[in-house]
Length: 191
Image (cartoon, rainbow, N blue to C red; front, side):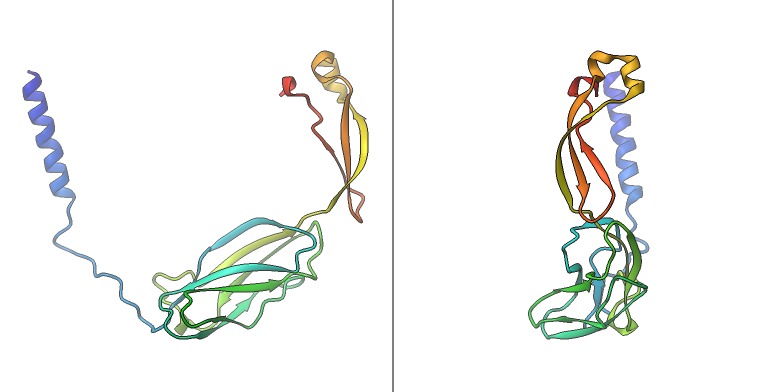
């Protein structure tokens, strides 16, 4: 009985494998439409936290051929805080280039959303390229230590004073802002 079951299972797997092959409608292989096709490496960048002191944010682009130098026009939908250059240049022999966005005017602690796109449709293949990248950027606060303080949670004290008692914590303040944070308010046993 086991031999019959093994034979039937092997036959079923073989039929499944043979039927999965698509030999009637083979798809053509990729062939470039333009001599230099450019694409963003990443389509979406979400909640990217940047140091408050950082002057730029880099977006990576790639291309299919690196034989010659090329310059590609770029456009942006950022309204304020982010300045996008009008073009990005690829050096001869290099297949990647960096688009550096100027973020010096971005406000610390606020999120900034926008897209950067390839401006000229002849510089990319619409079927395969990532022609625009959606970015959500935020400059992080710079935290300064104010020293040690005490912290407790009234509700947690009612539940279990042993695990959640008054704790010594480090208190941090955002440089230039009235925002505070405490570090490690719960002990390891309470988590």
